[in-house]
Image (cartoon, rainbow, N blue to C red; front, top):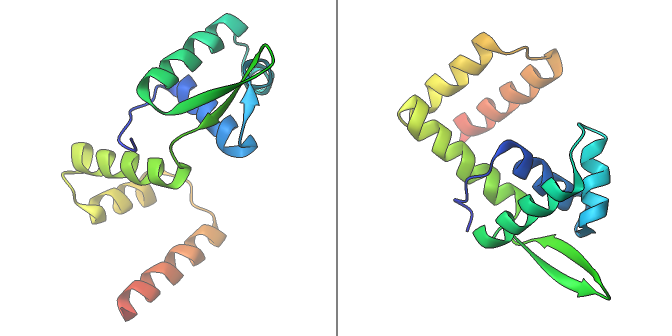
Length: 124
């Protein structure tokens, strides 16, 4: 289920669950409210939607539902990146990387890491 498309707030919910491993709706709402104000009822609705998509599941702990992710963060990122690469850049990795380097702020540390990755890939 790694090809699941997520909206912005759904992705924020997934990030909370990937970080915490499992959390109640209230814990998720509290974590999201540190980023932006969201009604608890909105979070509950989004959690139901994520369950319907097969992205998360819950277990009952008394009267509280405790949610956990069913998709792994790295697999989701890989799928989302592939989708972006194919749809926006026609599958051309060089165009994507070039675009990012031209339009985004890249720190010297990040540039060193990118150079190491390129050097490593060239040796393969």
